[in-house]
Image (cartoon, rainbow, N blue to C red; front, side, top):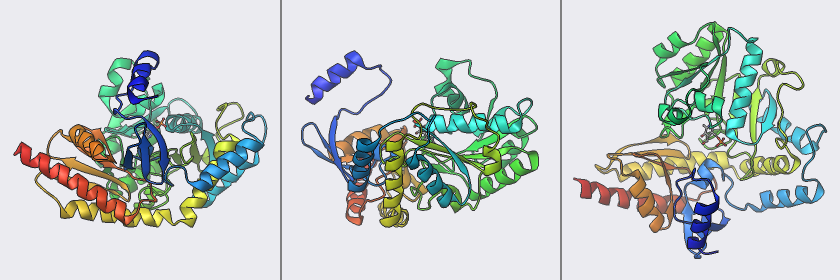
Length: 397
Ligand SMILES: Cc1ncc(COP(=O)(O)O)c(C=O)c1O
């Protein structure tokens, strides 16, 4: 189908939930994508931090085909080896924890919220404290946890047991966490909120507060986990260990899988029947995820994320112009704060020049290329973006 036919069919047959870019993509390889017209793009979105090992990595494609041919799906009424192998791999990476597999980031957080309630024993420990500017998903509970009132408005009333405090404000957290709190739920870097890293001392203080008050600390690493920030887990930067961590985007190499991993004694609060999913932890996606972790390890992608992230930040800062307020982030999750609400215009201009980036907020560009990105690709993207921002900055001044 041609782009126009696809757009017409989408308008006719798909719910109008997405504000899409006018591009239909058909093929990917490494950091590159091609559209229906055969046009090539350098992908600095990567499915929003999903395609860490790059598009169509042969090891992941091989794993998917091999497992699909052997066994595609069985109910969680039965054991499968890929599921336990993946759970053991995650335990090995963290050094602790038991996993529940789901299919999306929201579901992993939903699991974490339910587990925290179960662990807290119900009333009065039923509240979740999360941060303003956060994003935790779009189910009713994870939307309630999401600290963005504009996203709540159309769906009110949401469950009331969710409280929001300014991100990074320790005093506010101190007054919000009490005997009603089952968990504090935080992103180590707010991705959808505009790529805002938490101060490490804030995360350490949150740990102390949770310990003092008997609440669990949950880190939502759906976007930051598995190497994206230059460490396997973003919380390692702050030297803080949560009681529960949730993962999703990068885990399946493009297939839908998420994980809620809890300290053993916390995980033990769940009983058979408390939580379940039909598709979560299926053999194909778990086998693919094991291949993804193998690739991250064997190709040293955590180190590459660190090095290429530093290179990208340095290149953008070196070209700093009045149009740029700040370049921030960790590893290959980078935000460029612009001097005005021009992010959508820069996204469009970059796309026309063959570079895909996105804008989580009107004034912020998010750069999250695959972790396999090369120095040449970093330099090309940085040069192109700096030119576009400089030009826009001059037009505005
Ligand atoms: C930090 C964080 N948590 C949760 C989610 C929700 O994940 P999903 O869209 O897979 O439900 C996202 C998605 O962007 C996210 O960035």
